[in-house]
Length: 260
Image 1 (cartoon, rainbow, N blue to C red):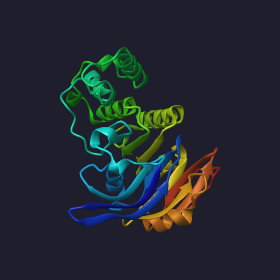
Image 2: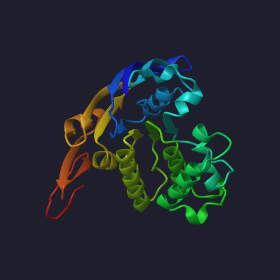
Image 3: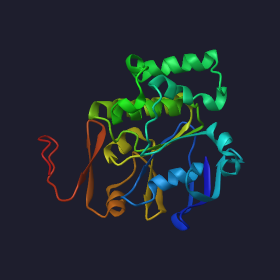
Image 4: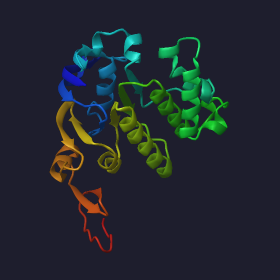
């Protein structure tokens, strides 16, 4: 995906300004930045949902912003931060993920993919329950599963693990990363937890005041960059191959793991 001079407006106000970026298939890119940086608006701008997008978003040589909404739905799957859960059952919600391809009648392939998704996301036991009767965390799992069922070329996720407990956060990030690699798609994901961003993404996209600060390899992004991005002192430490972020004044001892 190649984004050229993307400006996104809400009520005629420029929220994202002249953003240029390239992402490759199989890449998980974490979008980070302070509150109000324009992260959610940027995702909406890529698929032109409830915003006005100016510029171009190329997949190969096709400008996705020039396509119809139905055509884009076959190529881009988007899961927003605040989605009102439908009254459909879990299984019916997953079926909606196949509608751009199957239309009104689900094919044998569609039904097989839905059953595989129910199993993969541990949803089989609750497949007949109304989605709006379930917890926010389970609703998010179902919506992510539905997004993957669209078999998109580009997957846009806005804080998809915010309502999940720690165990399910790790499990969901593993699924997102593995499915991105397996399906060779592009996943752009807004994350507030920098630890998750560093651990699960291939690249970090830093956004501030609606402008691109830079794109960095996750293993190479530095403490200075993060400090400037969030306007606070940040240090990075590595334990057993994992990088951890600490904010503000601290004392750190690897052996005792004491810090504050």
